Image (cartoon, rainbow, N blue to C red; front, side):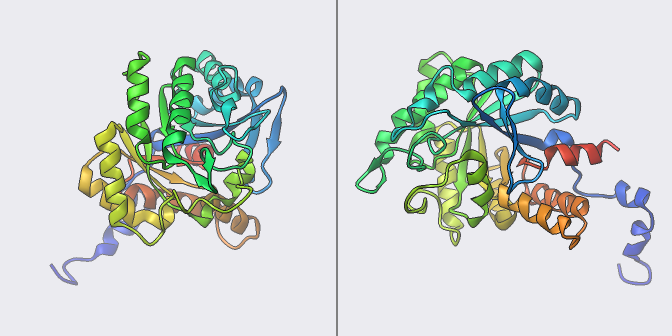
Length: 324
């Protein structure tokens, strides 16, 4: 079928025609909104490197939860900022910690909103790394016990799903066993399966107050040059009991999203991370690009690559546009 018989531009003539034949479409139901929960009352502190995003105290979450659900967004993922930190991050499994209290507040305000919790130690340790430090590096096996205690505390508080993001070997299996033994066999795990040691996390570390005091996380997060390793990591997580697998970041790793979806056919989440968000916000503020169009094009690319779910700070803005 060649020109002039076939003219592809015929179906691009109007917005209605373009919409009718669009292969990839977005919906608010695709999004998971990250929220940063802190201690205290009446806190709504804007994150300077992430315009439009805030650290919120638990008392401010009820209104947030109702608004989020009204936009058609089905889920949030919680990151906690504790009052106190120590070398082993013990506040991560405090039953009255910010995440644990936030779960209860959100479920009371909007019961149908699915609450996912990030399971990691970096926000809770005084050194900012994702586990117990031994001889200058994170001790993988010693950290597993802490992650299990954190995940169990989230389930006990009423979390609908837990999401280990630490990249410790064996943590999905250990958490699955702990949840099952604790009577939470129906709580699913969304594993950060291919989490890369990325420069795009910078603004998040401001938001979560989790910048490492020394070194970096390259001994446990993945090297950006690797793709086959992402498949091995994902296979391990599935074997250990992951219900959803995740790629993080999203935009620099669209090829990884596609490979994982094609290889496993599993539900795939992708994290449209803080640096991806902040770059678009900064460029839009400078007038260098159309922020709304860049946002929607980026999100569409992530879904087109194979993501079933998109964790994104754009969730509210995108849902509002989609609702027009």
